[in-house]
Length: 116
Length: 113
Picture (cartoon, chains in turn orange, brown):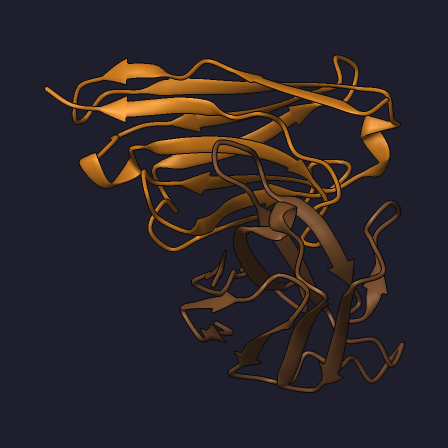
């Protein structure tokens, strides 16, 4: 059974940093593009970033480029999102998901709250 | 960047009736190399992560009931729920994955009339 378990969310002040993690199991992690998708409270889905199987290609939505960094460790079956310079508009549930797009599997999400 | 626009923003349909959601992309999602439309549909119920329903515009994901169908090509796509059930109340999203960023539409809320 495919499992994606996010962690690392929490309350952070504006300008602060968080590192999200996603532990994957039940599939060959190193064979998949992986993505982060977020959803602000009461809002729609927003794709944030994705990373190629070997980490050689990465893409970001314009609003986070330069502040967020996506990475992966295939030996640990883990995906990460380093978030710096957090803003109020970054407050959301963050999901990790398989695939460049057409995301077949999703985690339950980790909540990031940005507030002073 | 490709922009995805869904219509309507919300709709209410009687149980057993048809629900139709439209999705329009600002650029063609049809790849000339493999003749596939890079368009996916998701269902999100309250408090849950999204669920992939349809990929390649018209291929149902494993386990998805056959009352869900996708159609369209190029820039215009449709998700049809034939015979709405109570458990289909949700928000539905389209997403292009033709290129980066793989943007979502704004979502369509489907309820019971």
